[in-house]
Image 1 (cartoon, rainbow, N blue to C red):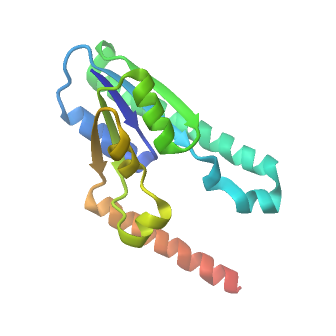
Image 2 (cartoon, helix red, strand yellow):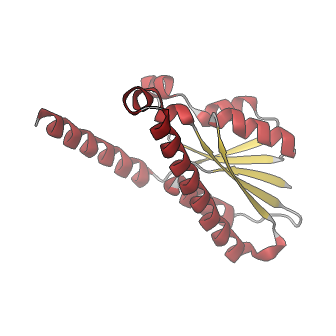
Image 3 (cartoon, one colour):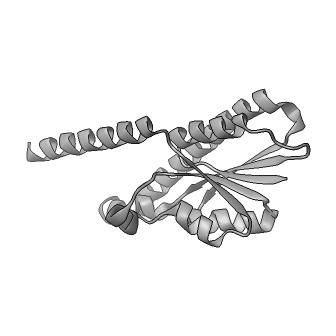
Length: 172
């Protein structure tokens, strides 16, 4: 069985590792861990203000962070499963749902495992949903791992606190 595991960040990494470790995998299972850095997230405002060089530095930094994250996750999984289950690591630049779907098709994945923020309504419409796009177009089974409710609340609280700090700083 070929399992493509798309990991966005540390929070999803932990939730997905917990999911993978909690399940029994048949002999011959192979994992491919993937992290995709989307250049447009860095994007237009940074390029307009600081130029293309800064955007490239930021993308490179995110690629490096993604590589470090996936290697740590691979170590955790190999500690649990041993060398019997091969685990590949790929860090790519591009649009996440396109890259995930392309790899799933090229690698002949039997399953894709990825996380979901659980956004709804207008937020989902504006920000899009990688997991929804993958579920809708995948050539194989897709398992969506949701963050535990506490993690969603913690990240929402941190985001609002950061926004408040930025607001108060900009008022000067």
